[in-house]
Image (tube, rainbow over all chains, first blue to last red):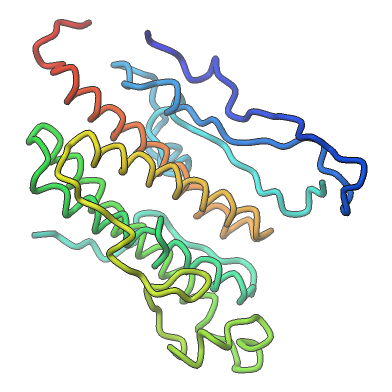
Length: 77
Length: 189
């Protein structure tokens, strides 16, 4: 029942169909976010906590709830 | 009533004069899944939701107002020093003829905010499921905004706001569990 978020990937990847007559160069791999709240359902008691400064920086008190996201800008296809 | 603290929830830094980004950020100010819609949705639903989760809607609705201030600060910083030529070159000319540099509740395409974006169905599960969906949509909007800029300072504030959507989503999911399971009657360790 108590799923730990760190055992779940925060991103899923999939390969869309690429047609032989597509007008633009294909993006072969597409991704989407699967952040920790999807797997937790109800937060377990007594999870480890960030120190206050790190909690502010991360936007959450608990490392198990932290979800990183990086910009796609400049990353190409 | 509220007690106001004259500071932002998280410091807003904008490191690059990218005026066009202001037009995109407005989506989270007055868009369908923006902070105004979120705050008004939750603060209104409070009155008729079972009392175990009133406090949750109160707290999250209040925090959304703090997020609204952060978005407003980002937009203001990006537009306050722009010349009219820069406004036009960045594609904000349509916004400018309507509002000058005033902030307004509209989406990135200029559609004004409408109460049709939010709902209060009165059914607690229906309302909380809408709230969960709203948080996930706002999280996605923040992702696409982060994608649209290489300004690491602006990205930092947007990443904070994205993380808050994740925490709020979990809290609403927990509220559903509380209402459907009546968890108070269960023993758990």
